[in-house]
Length: 168
Image (cartoon, rainbow, N blue to C red; front, side, top):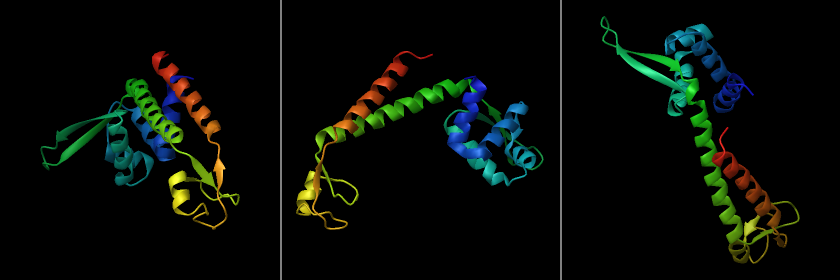
């Protein structure tokens, strides 16, 4: 996958199709104001600003603030930073790894129950409090073997750890 393909996939995932259009505008020019991007896209500047601020938080775009000498207002010039893409993806993987680790710990440290009607599962503590009757439909609760979930989490954690220790 080329860096452009990765950029567009990431942008679409983070901000949708509108974000892709913003990136295309920024990619075609050195620097643009949010008003210029909005004008080229035919949308309201606020929509563009929301997307740009989201990307600025991820360092996928940079912003330069200048003061208009005539009006005294600030002008924000935006620039795409595709070289930050790898760092962004790396940080996202670290965040996912942390969340998966937390979920794995939760799965290992709890026993779960569910009803045969397909209602959400509950922890042992919640099942005991509800006298082992489903809190939603009142049917008797059955023990859930969460070993498959634990194994899937361990596998995904292993994959992410491998990717993080051997970056491409």
